[in-house]
Length: 355
Image 1: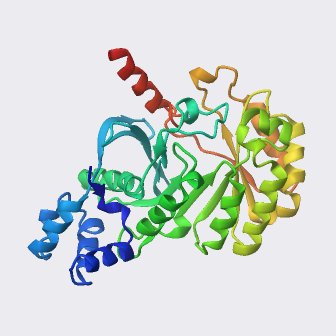
Image 2: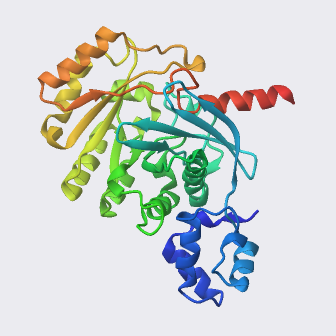
Image 3: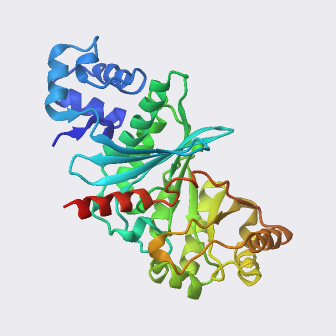
């Protein structure tokens, strides 16, 4: 199988072409055809010489994802299920907000983090996505938008799909550099958010990258006992370690971090937990923002239910009174397979039952 050319940064593409006997300027020509004109084949690159095109076609593919399913919500959210060249399935979501069009991308086939409430972890990690497969999700969605003929563009990215992004760190960083390149898709770093379930050692690395990319931390509980109960990763990276890494990131970047907190009925949604969370974030409150997330129930995780509206309001009000910046996430795509990983899991079950 050929690798997707989308996996190369402009510097990597330049080096590769020069190593294979091509002029350095060819890289920028190819880059323009890929990301500005968004062609589907190397043969469409009209100002690139034949030898270069044949070389590229011999070693690379432009797109290695195939659309398997597309679900459209009444609110405009679109969930894509893409099939990779090896037959694996991944999810990508297009969301429409007042500030622009945002795409949620997947970084792994399956997930090993093992959060007990999450649909993404129903199927264990098969492999990492390479950077071309991650960039390819953005390109597939952008080409879908191009086809609507309304001069729309992907303006924001959240790396919050299936998998743990920091567990696929090298491919993640390549992806970020490709989509952020000003001569390509030019998606601003401040319009990109990477979410981690709490790989503390990688938070230090990410801080040292000196990027303007936003960081979100999936916390979901304010103490170790409760967090370990719902997120087994807390055994390896307990809250004290996470807060040390978070403090390093805040000191190094001076950038605000989003704290993600899924509200689970009668599990982590009491005022007691809200007060604990406020104490945990008190000295960090100027550079943190708590995103309260109503839970999308998953059939396989029947022990968890969505918090009652009154519990959500009380949790929110408690944080606000303690000076913690917070909000309740807008819900999108609730009339389709809203939970991350849900569509993929259903399609895999269908395939198995058809065999």
